[in-house]
Structures are given as structure tokens and as C-alpha cells.
Length: 191
Image (cartoon, rainbow, N blue to C red; front, top):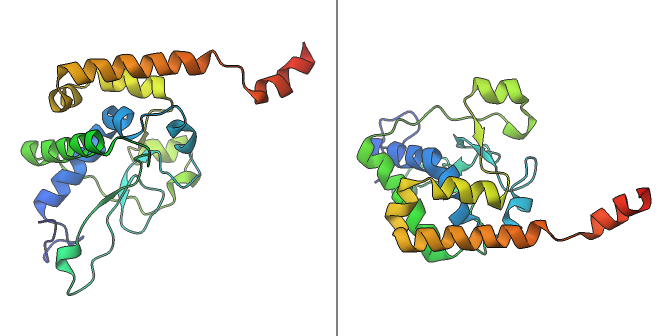
């Protein structure tokens, strides 16, 4: 379904809209695809897990990668969303990922140009020039974006949407009152 031999990137209109849907809605589904406090310690610029909302074919710093087309392998045309945490609930994760992509197809979202430059080495001006935004930087930020999302509410249902939000805020509150070894080591001697 994603393959089109006549397209510059060998992507069908459906494939492009699906990817565009994920790009548009990824910040609001991040709380589902990355549901733990530690998920956001992995989603840091410069590391393996991408945080910048962009797509590419060769660039591993992009959030979505579309592997290069190989002649004779048309049915292997696909995209890879590279941010979900391995500890995420797979049922909820796939539900919101599919909903975001299908919304892009239903609404005919337009796919921006791929970003093949290493996004991790871009400064703020280069990111702005390319129209690149970032995923939420913490569980709290992700929970707030998810709570505002009609897509997530519609996909998971009002009850699960509300309870997931409440659960993530409770988790965030428990986390933020903890005093870490780092804080003890670096700040206690100054007091």
C-alpha cells in the first residue's frame, strides 16, 4: 500500500499521508508510546532514540525513517516510527499509532520534505528553518499534550484517556519529589 513506482521517494499518496499523520500527532501520542518517567531520559537529543519530529530515508536522527526502496521488494516498502519505548503497552501504543496514521490518510495530510542532514547537529535556527519541532521532554509535558488530544481521547475512549492521564500525573508527582544520588552528591556539599 505504501509503494508507488512513479514517486520520487517510491511512496504512495496513502503512505505519505500516513507518515504525515504520525508526524503531526506524535507529540500528543508520546505519553502512550513513551509512558514512563525513564522513557524521557532516553528521548534526549544526540542519543539513539530520536526526539525531532521529521522523517528521512537515510537519516537515523529522524523520528520516522523510510528504508530505501530495493527493486523487487515493493511489498517491503514501509516506515519505522523510532520513538516508542520498549516498555510501552503494545496494545495502546499500536492503537494510537494507527489512529494517527489513519487520520493523516483520512484528512489527506501533506508530507513535508525529508530531512537527510543529521538533525542532532542542527542549531535552533536550522531546526526552525526546516520546521522541525521536538517531542515532549518529560512525562508531565507528554501527559498534558495527551490530555488535550481529541485523537487520543477518541482512540482510547474517554475512560482510559482520563485514567491514563491521572495515572501519569500521579507517577510524575512521585518522581519529582524524589531526591536523587546526583542531587545529594552535587548539591549537599554546597549547603
